[in-house]
Every structure is written in structure tokens, then in C-alpha cells.
Image 1 (spheres, rainbow, N blue to C red):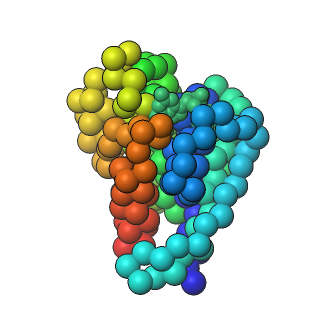
Image 2: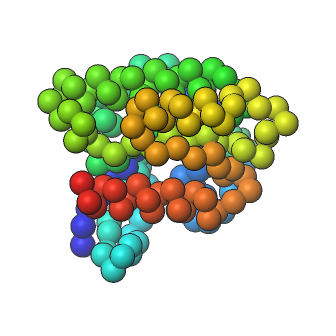
Amino acid sequence: MTDMKLALLGRRGAGKSAVLVRFLTRRFIGEYASDANSLYHKRLSIDGRQLNLEVYDPCSQSSEARCILEEPVDWADGLVVVYDISDRTSFIDAQSILRQIREARTDNCKGESGVPVCLLGNKQDLCHARQVREDEGRRLAQESRCHFQEVSAAEGYHDIAGLFTRLIRRVMEH
Ligand code: GDP
């Protein structure tokens, strides 16, 4: 059994809990109590390997990007940065979070071998109210050398499951 730790980062309301609950339970829970730091556990098998996954949804009560970092960046083996495509402020927070992750990597002397990260543009179902273009998300991910995908926690399980599986594989190869 391999232990693996992932953390979700992003502005409050971006849908971190919804994304995580969708991944863990396959269900969409509209109003999840996301006012506390939450640690979730799941056992799963990927490529024949048994994993004991811990996922941390930290500090979601804060709208301050700054407070979220350091601790999860040091703690986690992989990070998911979430923004809401219908909320530009959440995208600006995601930019700031990715910058801080890069700086934390440099400080830790981990360089490019720092933890795998993926950037997630959530609430794709709200594309009629879109404030962040898909190519802006893609470009930010390229700059940060991380994987990017737009998803909807409200509408689908497969994209989100695929994204976590991909991140977990990258962590295993790391
Ligand atoms: P967190 O603060 O980042 O953990 O965000 P939550 O998971 O609590 O979600 C904030 C709000 O956005 C809640 O009202 C969710 O129901 C809603 N939400 C989350 N994901 C989606 C989505 O993919 N589409 C839509 N339309 N709403 C979503």
C-alpha cells in the first residue's frame, strides 16, 4: 500500500469541495460544508497499485490566496489548483497560487522536480457566463508547466476522475 497526499488550492467558491466530492463519491453535492479545513481519505487501485490517498482541501474558508500555501505545498505529493471560469477573480488567485508554488519550489531547492501540479478551470457548464477564456487557462498552465483542463463538477465524473488519475500517475512516476 502506497501513501499519497494531494491538496486542492484555490479561491473560496471555485468549487474545490465539489470537485473533490465528485471524485471521491461520483456525486455532485451542491452545498457542501466547506468552511473548515478538510482531510479526506480514499483507498484506490491504479495500474494494479494499491493507494492510500489523502486529499486535503485546506483553508477554503479564506478568500486570501496567500494563507493557503506553504503548508500544503510542503505536505502534498501533488497539487490541484482550481478556479471558476465564470469568476475572473478566482483565475487571478490561481495565477498567484501558481507563482507561489514556483517560488516555494525554488526555496526548497526542488527546482523543476517539485511536486506535480494541475490547473483546473471548473464550472464549464457556466460557459454562458464565462469570464476566463479557455486559452488563458491553457497559457497559464504552459507558463507553469502543468497540465490543464476545464471541467464541470456539476455535470460530469469522468473528466474529473481522469484528471485525478493522471495526476496520481505523475506522482507515482515522480
Ligand atoms: P470551494 O469553496 O472552492 O470548496 O467551493 P464549493 O465546492 O463549496 O463550491 C462553491 C459553489 O459553487 C457551490 O454553490 C457549488 O454548488 C458551486 N459549484 C461547484 N462546482 C460547480 C460546477 O461545476 N458548476 C456549477 N454550476 N456550480 C458549481
